[in-house]
Length: 351
Image 1 (cartoon, rainbow, N blue to C red):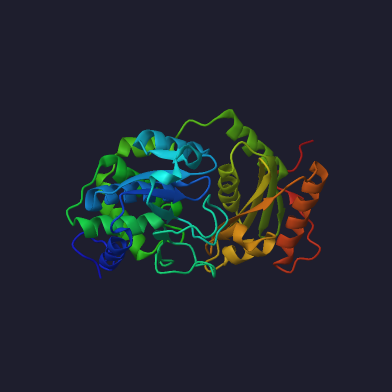
Image 2: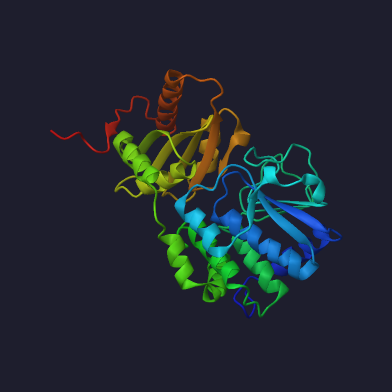
């Protein structure tokens, strides 16, 4: 059932929960997962607005890693999202801590094990190590941003909001659910329809179609040249990449090949090998598969149709990394009981 704004009524319960958990704080740090995506950025942007306008709590958005994807950079720039590297913030300034679009048990955020967290906002499957009363984890929605849209309308049923904030939330829901087509619930659709009319079409256009760097095209060329196919599977090991986000971007692209239902892509960034797994099958449990491909489960996670992970390379030589990539290809095929898969190049050599 929806309220007058078309946003789920159970959002009031989440807002009341936030009331309880942040009560009495003066300044909070809003911590995102490493290399934050639009869903994490928009959710933190919205919570920052809510903390200020409902509770008079100041807050700063913090992340580790980089914001490297062209669309994400354009989003931060166009919408004036004040995200800062966590290394530039002094922890002693904050008496509150919020974790957004990830969970304490994951290894993809900069917080130390055992740090006291006031609030966790997420939509990924709950991890076994993620316990406590300070958690709002709703796997029924396709984007964490949906939860924030609901809370904003619960806070103010006539919410029109700053244009930049509305644009961020609309883009986040669209991006996370691939235009409401990937794991989007009725709540995601209602939230998107509620916030979209308040967004800037011009800014959204500049975010969706940003200028792309030469590095992007180099990575794309390398990925296409190295892509291999076997039946409904496609796999590509890009090698060194300019930003971890390109790995997921390529995985999404390769999944669009006809007759392909699964894609696995890896890329090396700094001292880690990043993995992205995609499936067009509903209920594919990509999150479970990715956790079985990496040595440490806390370094992987995701959803039914899309997931990601990381393998620390330590002092691996180039030869050892190539061997690891080959083992991942074999393990990927074996998940479908293809023990002797004969992989072929996606783009056959000319001549």
